Amino acid sequence: MRIGDAAAAAGTTPRALRFYEQRGLLSPPARSPSGQREYGRAEIVRIRAIRELLALGLTVEDVAARAHRLDLLDTDAPHRCAGEPPAPETFAPVVARRLAALDAEIARLTRLRDRLARHAITGTAVGPAPADG
Image (cartoon, rainbow, N blue to C red; front, side, top):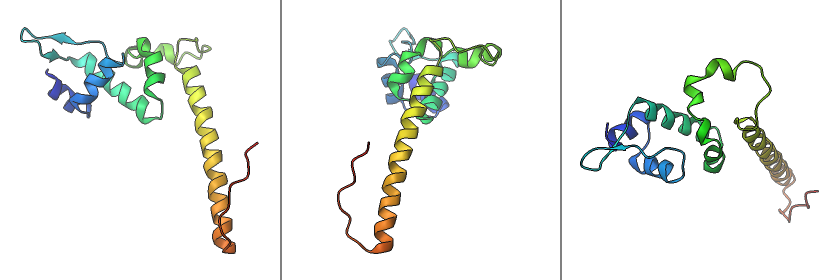
């Protein structure tokens, strides 16, 4: 299928597919004799996996660092769930770093929310935030 159809099937845009290809998340697809990109089922599955990982909060760089393992998300489920310690090339270290970053951001936003709520309750002016430390 051509890029527009593939994008629609994966719930994204042709521009996103070109971007994924440019950033190394998606291998360059086969080309038709007229030079148009042609995508198959495997590419659609991969695009959906990329979109899911990005929607979960991973960055393009996070996914690109493990792009060579994306196919396992569709084809290697029993191995992934085997309870073995995660190998360095899996997504586990990437996910752990992203979770730590999200936890830090949640803590920062919670402090900001609490500070704003205190000012709203007391009616005092909002001043500079105390230094985090």
